[in-house]
Every structure is written in C-alpha cells, then in structure tokens.
Length: 105
Image (cartoon, rainbow, N blue to C red):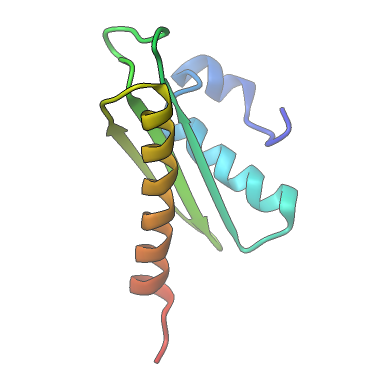
C-alpha cells in the first residue's frame, strides 16, 4: 500500500510478478520524489514457492523517468543468497540502463 500498487494488479498477477515490480518502481519514484525507482519482489524461500513461481524466482524493475524495464530471474541458494542476488542484479541493471540510454559525452 505504501508504494500504491493496484490491488487488481496484485489479484491478477500475484505479488511476485513483473507487473507488480513495475508498479512498485513507479511508487518508489513518487514516494521519494526521485527520477529513478527500483523494486525487487520474489520468493526467497525456504518455503512459499509453487510450481509456477518456485523458490528463487525474483521479479524486478528499473524506472528512469518514464522508461520502465522489468525482469524475471531465477536464483539458487539460501534465502539470504537469493535476496542479495536480486538486489545486486537490479543495481547492475540500473547502471547498465543509465549508461547505455542516458549517458551523454
């Protein structure tokens, strides 16, 4: 609710989805009054996974201005490893997007 994720989006796609990650990134940007918003949502385990959304599934989003990119990854490892990989991956993607799309020499 803090990030203003639409309840209909949650009901249709579930909390671990690119759609929810996208809305979370947009909400983060608004909440903090920034030009960039990041989000990560996933199933870090050790329980909670399903056949369609297994433990280790992580969805993330990077929003820069009006551009939003979403991703789904599968990570192996314990709960802390999945969390760290999800966080570091979204930060690397932010850097790559910023460098490739917005860097001006």
